[in-house]
Amino acid sequence: MSKSTLTLNERRLKRRNIAYKTMGQCFIWLVLILMYIPIMVLIVYSFTKATNIGTWTGFSFGLYSDLFTSKTGHEIMVALGNTVLIAVISAVLSTLLGTCGAIGAFYSKRKAKEVIETTTQIPVVNAEIVMALSLTVMFVFIQSYMLGGSNVFGFWTLLFGHMVLEVPFVYLSVKPKLEQMDPALYEAALDLGCTQGQALRKATLPEIFPGILSGFMLSITLSLDDFIVTAFTRGAGLLSGDKNISTLSTLVQEKIKKGPIPPEMRALTTLIFVVVLLIAIGITIYRNRTVKKVRKGREG
Amino acid sequence: MKSTNHKSHKAKRTLKSIFAFKRKYLSIPYFVFLVLFVLIPIVIILVYAFTKVDDHGNLTGSWDSLVTFFSSPAKINVLVVSLFIGLLNTILCLVIGYPIAYLLADKKVNKNYVLVMLFIMPMWINFVLRTGATRDVLNMLGLKGGEHPYVATMIGLVYNYLPFTILPLYTTMIKLDKAQIEACRDLGCNPFRTLIHNILPQSVPGIVSAAEMVFMPTMSSYVISSTLSEGKLTLFGNSIAFAFENNLWNDGSFMATIMLVIILVTMLITNRFHKGENSRGRAF
Image (cartoon, rainbow over all chains, first blue to last red; front, side):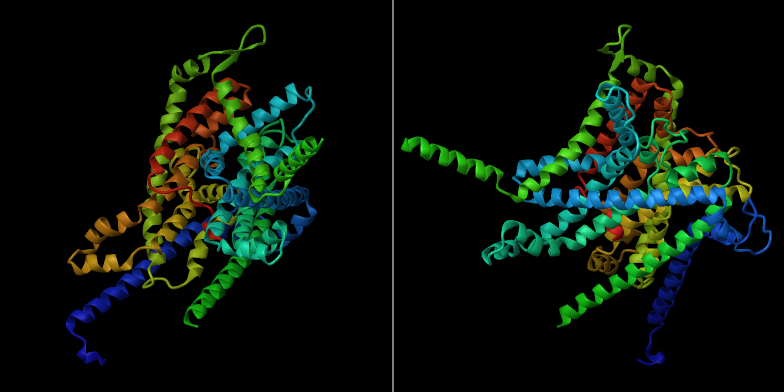
């Protein structure tokens, strides 16, 4: 169609569409920029050694070497190690427990299934602080009435605390995959001579694997981001105790209570941002590929 | 002789059928875990809320915590302020998040998943760190939390919860029935009327789960309010934690019970709109 054949109305419509598109994109980018300002400021000031952001004392990579050598840097690295360790261990255990729970509940009778499902909803909707405190109260209860006062708080209580956060979300990620699965698959595996365990492993598991994976990833992010449950279940000194396991959340909270974010932390923020960016790129590529595959499958 | 043999054989078979592997048994450890670490702790909290330790060191039923709470204007004030801030944050996040989710899902504006990813990414950076960064930047700009506790806290809250609103809204928006919207326009609705009469009703489930993701956590938030207001603004979460830190277990438990009641009420309201969705898990 040549330009001259466009009616006035069509041209107006086209112009309006272009205006809508630009305005929409401007709005999206404006909010994005506002959202990223704090992180970007930290990243920019990670290349100078000033104690406060806002003062620039010349470009240097000093903070990055401080991260591995200074005292605060050491604290940060220990906290980072703890955070990652707890995230991985709790996510693996939660994924195992949650996946088994979802499979089991899916094949249970309706009433049992309803009970499990309702109980699963409780930690999902519950306020984190209520969850953390009720767990802590129970641990203190066990400590003083069943163990005669010997300290229970430590790695295990922290681990259970994080698992309570994660387990229901694994369940909820796996459940829809089980519902979408073809039930004949498991039966066919049995007919072809698999034992029940083999059928589960070879027929069911590959089908629900995407759900398990997303449950695992979600568990990791929930654990990495958690503050309240960690602060309460890690030790009896609650929020002020020093001889407790510290994670990034609790360490940063202790520091920002007293003053600005420690300079070394700015260097770590840059590193975390790079890792997160790489993961985001990875997920986008993976997603685009699966979308293409689905399209190809439909065409073929 | 023969009959006893037969009996024992039968008993063995029933035993075997009980202990033989069944798929539904897989849920037992999961359920036991939830009972031990979710249900029992909540029961303990409820018990503490309505009891006290008497002079002899025995636990007796009492309404003391209830009376203490409702006779303290300061505590009720905290609850009211928290409800208000929770509501305000939910509204602000929806007002900003709704158009963004709509635009992101609109093929005319955005064909790329990268932009959606950019909105999700902040959720993967530690939120305490982000909160500290927000405070430091606000300080740098001259907005001191100690002087403007409400403004600073609101900025921090919106900044933290916006991604949580955009995600569920986006997933609803990409499922919107485009033909219905077209029909609405063809029948002579202007964009505003199309929004009110078609797009909004279609996206109610997304709005509800977005609101759920914001309201409750805001009310009970701990770090954001205390960091950004430099301790000037106390939300319900802070006061629950404060009670426990000062060994006022009964009072703290009662406040936690109030929180549980509020959760129950919101659940009853929102259950009509959607059932047990995994609103956090949509990022993956």
